[in-house]
Every structure is written in C-alpha cells, then in structure tokens.
Length: 199
Ligand code: ADP
Image 1 (cartoon, rainbow, N blue to C red):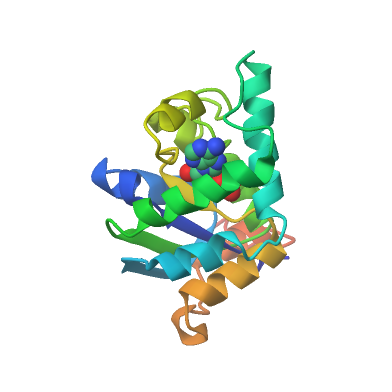
Image 2: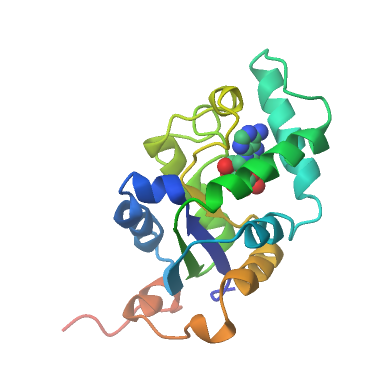
C-alpha cells in the first residue's frame, strides 16, 4: 500500500502559468514521494493512448460533461457522451502537442486518491474546491472552453485508479526511470512506533 504510484502531468497551461514549483510542492508536502520526473513534448499518439487506457474513458468523460451542463441548467453540446469525447480527444491532442509537460510519478499510501484530492475536480470553475490546485489556480469552465472550441485548462492530470496509473506510468516512463529509494520521512509517515527521538 505504501508503494502505490500515480501519474501526474503538469500540463502546458500549468507550465505557462509558472506553477511548476507550486504544483510539485503541493504533492510533496502531503507526504508523497517523487520517484520519477521528466519534461516531454508528447505526440498525438501518446495523448490518445494515455486517455484511452481506460476503455470507459469516452463514456465517463462525456457523461460527466453532460451532467455538469445540466446541473447548471444549460444545454450540453450533445446528448451523446461519445460525440462529446470525440471532440475532446481531438482537442486534447491538438493542445498537448503545442508544448512540454512535466511528467511525474508520485508514490505513497493511497497515492492515487490523495493526488486526486489535491488536484481537484475536472472543471475548475464549479467542480474544483478552493484549496485544490485546480480550484486555487484556475477559473476555467466547460462553457468557456466549448465556446472557444478547446480543452479545459485545468493545469494537471492525475490518474483516477491504481490500475489506470500503472498503465499510464508504463506509457510515459521506462521501468528504470522510476527510482526506488528511501526518504528519511518515510519512517515518520509509516513506522508503527515513533521512538528514539528523546535525548
Ligand atoms: P480529469 O483530467 O479530471 O481526469 P477527464 O479524464 O474526464 O478529467 O478529462 C481529461 C481532460 O480532458 C480534462 O482534464 C480536461 O482538460 C479535458 N476535458 C474533459 N472534458 C472536457 C470537455 N467537455 N470540454 C473541454 N475539455 C474537456
């Protein structure tokens, strides 16, 4: 459990907003351990593989968009989730290839859920709470991004399940690029008894 891993990408907008250090700090300070990091300009092929490692991604992301529109009393761009994600995927490919991303592997207990909590919901405007990366540093919305025919600029990607994380990490990192090492703080986070500190 302590070695659960998650993939985090600081996307193009996060880099252009000069938030690399701020974003890394958020995952670091909670107690996660950085075990892999690199800067990459992704290809469209990598982006498509990345988003479709979960065969349900097209349906889930389309349904999430429709639900969000309806909750705001607005009409979604389509009632068909697959039509929405067809467009989203094309826009994601166009967006990702225009600049570098910082790809990282973070490790620790409940790494996937902890990182999602720190990241915040998909739509910064209404789904990402204040205190999360997306809620604190972005105000983008589905309405704005659809109007401009682009993807939501929500700064980071974070895997949504340990199984998905494993597949995503294999796409972005060679096995030897994910480093096994000890941190002094691992003991403080995970050792059953904290002893030997009093002098
Ligand atoms: P998350 O990144 O929160 O896991 P998804 O996997 O559902 O969200 O979507 C992947 C990315 O695609 C989002 O982070 C966002 O940038 C973009 N996206 C998803 N749905 C839409 C949409 N309806 N309009 C614009 N961009 C979208």
